[in-house]
Structures are given as C-alpha cells and as structure tokens.
Image 1 (cartoon, rainbow, N blue to C red):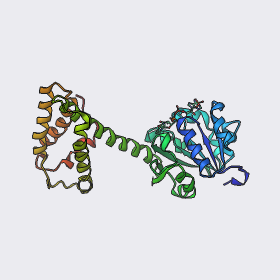
Image 2: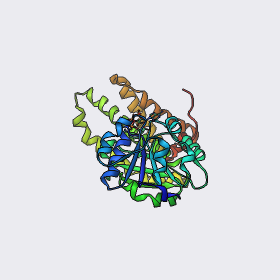
Image 3: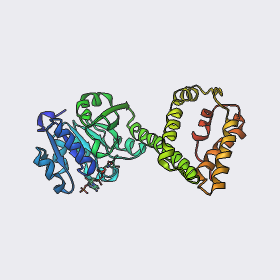
Image 4: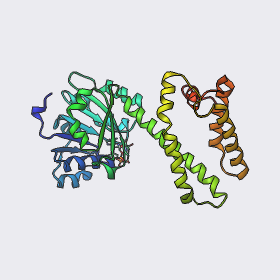
Length: 294
Ligand code: FVH
C-alpha cells in the first residue's frame, strides 16, 4: 500500500447530506480528512473545521490510504471514480444500491493492491457518529479490520462477510422488516379508527404485539434452517382462519384489504400445497421463489 505518499488518514468523496455527516464525524474523531465534492461549495464548512479540499476526485483518492464514497447512486460513483487511482488503496463505498451493483463494482475496482468494501448505512445523517448509526460492511475482512477505527467513528460498524453483495442484501432485508411492521401497524390503526380509537391509544398494544412476535423469530429461524416445521404454537390451518377474519373485517368496515388479502393468499397456497399442519415458518416456501402474477 502506497500510504507513504498520502497526507491524510481518510478521504470522503460526496458531501451531500450523508457524506457531509460522515466527514464531520471523522473530523470530530480527530482524523485528518481530505474531501471532494462535484459542487465544491459544499465543502466550505468542513474546510473551516480542518478538512483538506482536493481539486479533483483522483487527487482526493490518492491523498489517503482509504476512501469513503457516498454519492447518489452507483452510476454517479462510476462517473466520479477512476479505479486506476485506487491502486494500493481501499475504497469503502457507502452509496446505496443493490447486491448486483455491489458485486459488479467489486470487479470494476479489482486490481493488484486495490481493495473494495461495500457498505450500507442504516441511519439518517443526524445520528452519524453515535452508536445508533449502524454501518453494515462486506468484503475482504483484513481491510475491514485495518480500517475499523475509522468506521467506528461513524457509528456501529458491523462486518457481514467476504461477499461484497451482502451489505446491500442486509439493507433491503432489514428494510423489509421495517416496512412490514409499519404496514401492519397502519392496518391496525385503520381498523380501530372505525370504532373511534385513536392511533395513540392503539399503539401501546401494537408495540406489545410487535415485540412478542419478534420473540418468535429465533425459534422459527431454527425451523427454516432445519426444514422442520412442527406446529408448536399454531398450524397454518389456524392462521388461515384468522387471516380470513382480518380480510372480512377489513372489507366490511371499508378499510383497505389489499395487504390482508396478500397475507391470506400466501397461507392459502401453503395449505393447498398440503402444509396445513405445519407452523407459520413453513411459508418460507412461498417466499423463496419468484412471485406469481395476480
Ligand atoms: N440521507 C439519508 O438519510 C440516507 C440514509 C441511508 C443511505 N443513504 C444513501 O447515501 C447516499 C447519499 O445520500 P445523501 O442523503 O447524501 O444524498 P444527497 O444529499 O442528495 O447527496 C448526493 C451526493 O452525490 C453527489 N452526486 C450525485 N450525482 C453525482 C455525479 N453524477 N457526479 C458526482 N457527484 C454526484 C452529489 O454531489 P453534488 O450534487 O453536491 O455536486 C452529493 O454529494 C445515497 O446513496 C443514499 O441512498 C442516505
């Protein structure tokens, strides 16, 4: 690694809302930071706090042994970066994208001495620099270990594995959890509002339900991994009955029944496939294949 020619610890490329927060946290942690942004004016505040402003993306990359990139998308990343400048250096790409883009970019960057880590930021800019900011990272572990102190300055750095596509996959899998809980809560709010119950009154009970359900996941994960689905709590036939009530109640009360119908269709298909006596975890067979057209 040609770090002898560098004059800072870390470079940040992209100084939008998130990139600016990353550079800010690195400065606050005492690192020497070089920055570059397409629109240079966005660097002014960081420069007044000690950041070094490079006059090109290539100059920024060569100023440090490691570069963090956080631009709008992977197309912008490729417009900005020249992989040749990365020789002997590490790129940690914290731009959001999908797993295929991450793996393609790993191949694009790959050259002797250049190392590519892909990351996903599970946080908003104001919490960067606090433990609440989870930073998911995948790629060669030695590079993660070497630069862990820098990543820890941004939040809770979490290493996922050598496959650069993993951080993007964890990103969408985590967001799937988030949207599932939010949509389930909104369905419940809509149902209870028909009886004059405010969202704030329903929410303590909704929170208990969400926490209780989360408590089942470890056991269900064992079932999915072992492909054995004993109905220790309830069978899919029982769930099918409950879901029919949810669909009928929603329709009768004039609230949106699209989400309940999707839930019910998945369970009904599993029951039709002969899984009526298995646990809810057996529905993995409905998820782990391409979706059917409506
Ligand atoms: N902000 C957030 O809460 C989320 C949290 C989770 C992860 N994201 C991802 O972070 C990436 C950047 O998001 P951002 O919020 O910083 O976005 P902006 O404030 O819009 O800044 C965009 C930066 O990208 C630069 N840029 C865009 N296109 C180009 C290009 N063709 N060439 C060079 N740079 C480009 C832009 O430059 P400029 O407009 O200031 O000149 C900004 O630096 C993103 O993947 C989120 O999904 C954030």
